[in-house]
Length: 523
Image (tube, rainbow, N blue to C red; front, side, top):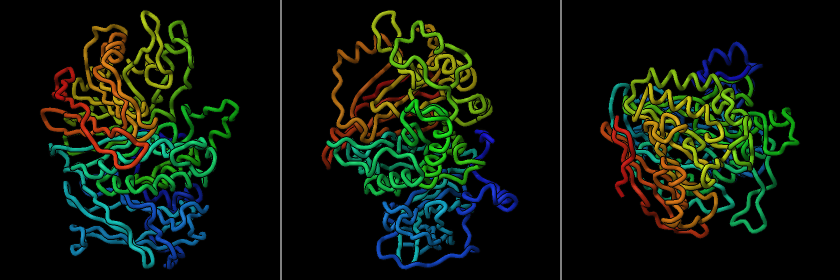
């Protein structure tokens, strides 16, 4: 069975009871203590990978940790033994006013990860949480519930992507963790799958990863970063994936290595998707197979904003015309080619029409606006981005024009640079109306320090791409403030990631007024 992206993420507990053999691996995550468990004593801190929270609702959300006293051992140093993990949620950081508490099972089938789906909380409130196992106590994390349905509560959040371990330090997250934000969004490339070159700043453990244990160790390495842990502890996260969580530029079951068979890619995707879920604060999925795990979901911030968490990898058609000008390359304009897949596209389009949220937010992996890098009449776009799927892109943007014009914001990662784009109802003619805005964030570390972009270079890019408002090539993240009247954006950058202690600055600021076309530069 292929997972239907319209399904909610939460799994009905009855499914575990009626079909445990089918969901054997997933069943181990259910918070309970009726299994055989132990209360071990740890020679090393079992909470070395930190804590996290995510997918908030008005009454709850997901709290996450993973027991890994020796993260690079095959089983994290747990020696295959199930363990009871206690958790507490409190009104205060000192835990003098505990609101809820409970116990969960950390099991080897899911790499001793713990996902606690808390409910029964008050809307629009900050809480504090922690975990205990044996004599060990985790760091404290902050969690916030979403506002009640119908509330137009302002939102402050930041989004990020692309954090390649061996190309730079995660210094930007040190500043991210100091921001006054309610929410964080990660748009993918949380890990990178490849081996490191000999001259890497800090090397990946091992060669290119393909097995479940490989992916688990790679996540453990990334999760060990103190700045990333601090950013997770700061607030709840909304997380999706892109290509490097599996394989560079993969499309459905087609990998970068053309010699890798469909069966091999299916097994690799299953391992990668399982390890992703084990290490992220997301709800229990409904899926018959890890290889078909659906992460498509919506998260509401009261009536102010609805986040559409998209998957542009699992359901897309393969890229075409690699490394060739697309003009004259017939397959790229085939209307049957899809980026989202038919079910996910219908879910999104129908949902945009039905949603009463003030702002519609597309949490999207690859750049939506086209970028033509060829001079004159020639056309050269990156086939991995939406520009390589122009009919599907314009079909979606035409629906945005009908259903949510100039109240739709697209958040984009992947590209390792900052971009601000006007989204038009289609790009076949330059006079088509503006119907939304796209803000693409640069990487946390991928690509190294980056470089300055000259005004002449930007002007050349804009001549070929009149919808492009700004481009910049430094590392960092994007901070947003969302109100009834406007969506404001700050591109927050560090000057280097090749050494520690980089300062933070706001490189540019923007404003989108609700219901009005265009993007206003304010700084």
